[in-house]
Every structure is written in C-alpha cells, then in structure tokens.
Image (cartoon, helix red, strand yellow):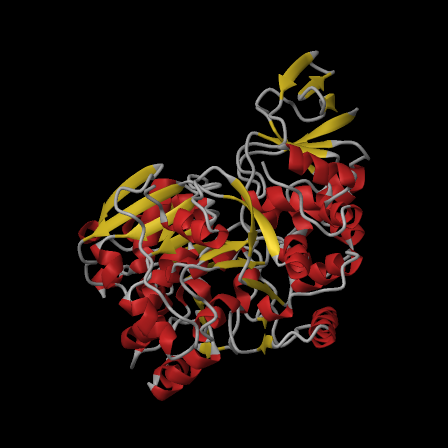
Length: 415
Length: 164
C-alpha cells in the first residue's frame, strides 16, 4: 500500500496498514495545552473518575496572557500551576515563548509521532513530520487520563511547490496564495502535505510558517517530510531517535496542487478573512494605525531580521504603533545579539515580552473602534484583536516593515 | 420544539465567544457573551430547546471549547449546519451538544421545528416541511447520549468507545 505521510504515521502507531477514512483509537505521544485552555481541561479532568494522569506526555506552556494582565488571568495561572505540581508534570514553561515555537525549540517534536494540543495552531508541528492537531480542552483532559484519543484518519491534499521565491516575497506570501487557492474551508477534515523542491530548500522557520496556516484552510494538520534539515534542527535539542520520513511516491492523494514559487507576489489579506487575500498593489495606500510583528506564524528571528534590514536608520510613520513580540526567549536573545532589538527601539518600535502578544486581543496592543492593524499573524477574524469595529490585515514580514515606515499599506518592491 | 436562530456561513469562534471574554471556566458565564456582537438579543432571549442554524463550516478558527460550552449552556439542544469545523464538532460531542449536518438554506430565522434523531429528520413546523439530516456515527451518538465524553468514560470504566 502506497501511503501519505498521515497514513505512514498512523500505520506505525497502530502496527498495521491504516488508510484515510478509517476512524481509529490511537496512543498519543504528546499532549500540549496553554494557560487559557488548560483551566477548562483541569475542570473536565477533575470530573473524570480516573486517578491517573499521563504526566510524561504532558507539556504546558504559559503563552496567551503572560504575565497576567488582570486578577482573573492570575487566578487561571495559579490553578494551572497547582495542578501541574499535584500531578508531577515536569514540562511546564512560563514566559519562555509561544507553545508552537517552544515545542520545536525544546526538541519535543519528533518525526513520525502524534501530538494533540489545545490550540488550533498545533498543526505547526506538521513541519517536523509530526502529526500535530488542535483539539478542545475536554479532548485534552481525556488524553491526559487515557493516553489516547480517537481520530478519523484524514484524506490528504498534496501541495507541490517548485521554483524560487522572487525578491521581497517569502513563505508567508506563498501560504497566503495557497490559502486563497484552497479556500478557508477547502481542507476541512483533511490533512495538507507540502513538498517539492522549494519546500526541500526551506529551512525550518519557513516550513513552520507553511504548516501554521493549515488550520486556516480547515485542515487537521500541515505535514512536511522530515529530512536532513529537520534532523539538524532537532538533534542538539533532543535525545530521541530522529528519522527521515517521506510519503510514498504515488501515494493516494485526494487532490494535488502544483505551484510555481517564481510567480508569487507580496500578498495581503483584507478584513475579515484570509479568503480576502489579494496582491499588495490592490490595497496599497490604506492608512494603518498599528503594525503587529510576531506570532507563531512570523515571530522568529529571521522575520525580525527582515524588519530590521528595512527600518534601520529610519523612523516609523508619525502616530504609527509598531508592536514587536518575539515568539520565544531564544529568539529575543538572538535579536539582542544581532542588534535587531536596538534597531527596532531606535526606529520607534515597541518590543513586548515574548508570547502570543496582542494576537488574541487580550493585552499589549489591543485595537479601538475604527482602528486598523496590519500584522504578520495568521488569522484576521472580526474583533480578534479588540474592538469588533476594528480591522486586521495580514501580510508577510516585508510588507509589514514597509507599512510601518509608510503609515499605510506599502509594497516592499517599491522601497 | 424550539425556534431557529439563523446565522450565515463560516461562523467562527470569535463570533461565538469573543476572545476577550474567555476568562472563565463557568459555562453559564460564557453563555452571557454567546453571539453577543452579531446577535446581541441572543443571550437574553434564547430559550431551552432552541436551535442554532447556520451555513458551511460552523465553528471555524480557535480550539476554544467555550464556543461549544456557551451554546450548550444557553439551552441550545443542537446546532444544524451543512458542515462543521472539525475542532468545534469534536468539542460539541464532548460537551453533549448535538452537531447535526443537514442542508439549512430553506430555514428562516424564527422558524419553529423539532429534531427526530432516531429517524434523522428535522420537522419545520412553520413551513410544514421535513429536512433529512446526516446520522451521527454510532460511537458519537453514544457519547452525546451519555451527556458528553466525561460522563461516557465515567459510565464505562474509563474506556474510550470502540471505533467502527
């Protein structure tokens, strides 16, 4: 049987051939949750008449509202800490970064294994050939108690990318283009699999940006084969055995999309959905109040390097708020070492502590009525960053950087 | 019998329970903000046994379980939509809310109807029509009937259901 990456992973887990369409019970390798989804999982777990908790599989990352912006948040955090202590959960990370970035940096992601996470962007782990998928808090509580969950093994949409990205474009423009093509519900109940020479040439940060947006197409996960680059990234971070995992040639794909990276141009998603993605030229000149640079999509040092290269020696536009939130402490330290942090501050930007920042509209750059934000994030639902009467545009780091300077949506090709 | 609260396509989790209100683990509190921005009358006027009716891909976006919990705690028995976002779908089953797949284009806001789970039928009393629904897989129906996954596990010695 020729297998997709998804079928390979589940066949290995169950020790038999598993095909798309089957519903299976499966042991999970890791169970991740964060500071705002863990409290509900604790509530469900405590209602279960089961004493055991598979602490060795659990990772808890405090990233959504860290440090707590109000007493209610502080109470949630206290309850999570108390629970982790009670059950001897060792892998608890506070203020170190966004869960999806921490999972990679700490070497918790292992090709061929299965991760469930109480956050929709758990699909980011797919970049490491790990079947990572988001679930709700009660599913996470059940996984804590049983070490298992049920899955409907998804069909796969394969996306082959060849060619080289033109100057001033990036993996974000590529995945926004793919999202426009597939549609925001086009991959519902399905896995995405990204491959081809362009993806092979990408380093892990660009691969993570691709996988991160799988859920924005409704996908369960966004898998990429593991290769030498995957192993190089992980080997200094883990003692686990790391394997190259590739799909079989001529595996049974539901659909195959072919893309040429040479044709990609800078993209911007207009409010209030990624289906409203267009070439930056169509939105050029729209006034922007805030540029938010960060998130699990584009909050890595490579992204901030693009920002620094563009804004160095210049000032952000008058009344523009440039809010920068590094995705992790490791990234923040690299930003300091490389002088990126200094450039941002000298150019009039703000650097917040690491984490999700204002992406979920709870602190550090919340939007007021009628305000417009352009962000490197992955989701621009109405009201996500604050007022329901605010607007979010989504773009690549390069578009975000030139927009911060111009005070209006700008095209990096015209710098 | 219950009335239909009709919404459009791609109703996302930020519409169901906006992120900035997600600071409680009490479903009754969550219900106070359910659909508060697009249907401010919903939290006040929804009645036990009413139905949420929507278009494609209901519940897209975040994994937040508050979306399913808030709808359930509002007294809604079932959400009827042609398709669901998968995380919301699982969350609904887990908390005891029925996610029913059916074509909903003909249903008007305020229509009174009842759900016949056994026969996979929706009776629209207002329009005097019937809509055929997609049956839930047996194991999901068993979880939902138990009142959600926690109650199911407690009644079954902590064992997840057999698949098939």
